[in-house]
Image (cartoon, rainbow, N blue to C red):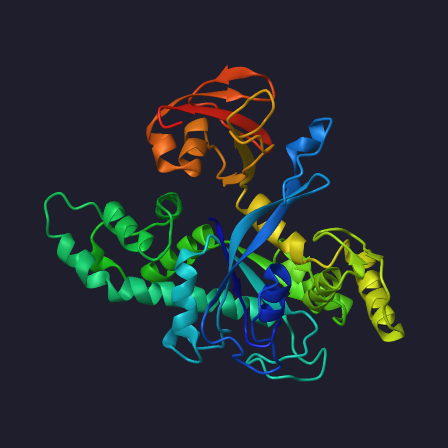
Length: 393
């Protein structure tokens, strides 16, 4: 399952975002290091279900009138403070957890109401743009420290006649969550000595920074947008194009309203409807959330998740079926499964996403929309419905 990690300094709203996105019970409090042990849960990204192209909607539990919700892992761990890469706060624990994340949501207190340590201050007193830089620097220095600790083994390996520095660095960095493609692209873009003994700290830090940027992309969650000065959000957007104004508190209130049966709302909708009895104070609070949603097109929680997976990682959703005519599995469930795939994925990749045995026994595939066989090297795209024929079927 694709993994999304929440990063940020203490008290920026990571745990509130996590709770709103997963509806899991976690500690949410107004003090640093509310989260000590990592929270792992399941949230969903939203896309259009292919059932919209049929006469009847699929009725899947994760499809709400054609809004399909596809599961991803969401990870929330302890907040970062300056010096985290040296173990300050709970930094090492947090940074180590990031090694398995595919993309990072950096939750920032856009209101400027918490300082660099996560302690409350007056709204607007702290510049949230400073938080962006320190998180990136901490991640870069953490990765550089890992490279430094392992450099002696690279130098020893260089004594072998068949030594290849690119292969050695790839092996090292994929061990801490980098991808082979990301390392290869970073190495192509850097000027460095072939002999590892000639490398300097500057070489290692440049490599770490480039690899981190390529393999741990960041989406900025400009949280507390409901109380943030507008210029703060604008400055964050200027610093990072992938910045989503967000009110995690607002999203959590709406989800609790849905659970209580007094609000009609699907995550990612631009508005909601009050359908039950609420107090005057509750109604006033909901109307304030509505004003923020009208300004930003929603609460931002679902948009941040969707941006991370569909836009930044460029993944897409494909749907395997057994019956290409009715788009069902063996039990008659329409569009039973949805899989997130990386760009360039083929029918065989989808087969492996279903099960390793299906992939090993792959024979051919059928495009269920067109009812035609497709080649093994055919690149799938968003919304494809595919019958995979395998010896393991």
